[in-house]
Image 1 (cartoon, rainbow, N blue to C red):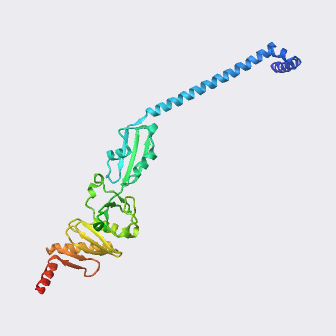
Image 2 (image 1 turned 180 degrees about the vertical axis):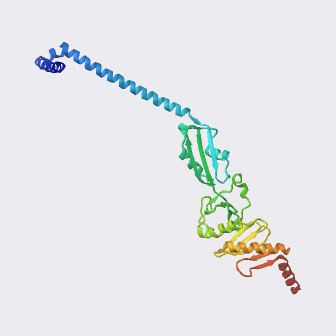
Length: 309
């Protein structure tokens, strides 16, 4: 019964539209059926428009709230880690221009990393934020193993000194960061050891390798066994001359640095046992390295003077 009514209703609708098609435009426009149909369509489109406006307004309000919350959200806890403990948290915060908190809306982690990496004393930096309230700052500083100075500085008057790290990178001497490294040795460079003498320059692997090995080998001994190295000269490509804190001058070569330091430690132990002071030591020979004691040199000088008289 309902199916018949549905067909009848469908057929009636078609018949009505067929009859309306025979009417004039004016008659169709002002017919009651047409007005009712138009009103229903109008109400439907108005409803759709109102729903769309409500959704748009809600979305805009939600975005506005999110932006407002982001601008009001601050990171109050800053976790700082320094790999070598040279640059303190307060010093790093000062480099970044930060105070006690960071605003999430203006946080630029990549830009902050670049700011730290531009500092010549910093080798690596990593910054990340972890919601809701923590900013992590990790810094790796350059480790000074030696001062570097141009050997010609004594003649030119330019006695500028920079630090060198194990990778040969030159960087400024900053006592606030490097107070524990102010006693490292000075390596006097030849003109062809570095293309330009300035922070950021890199000394080549061939030139720096013996010096890096020398410093590393010396650090294996106590200051009693081998006094601190004060000066390092490399007058020839194969030759190294170092001056120890006690005034002893040591002749070395660029090969087998570790073995030569072992011989130096044994010879210095012998000088202490015999209560003598070594004026100069040649540790290049593996067998019978030579030692010139201070009294020997003084006696030779006295002998030459008496012969002249």
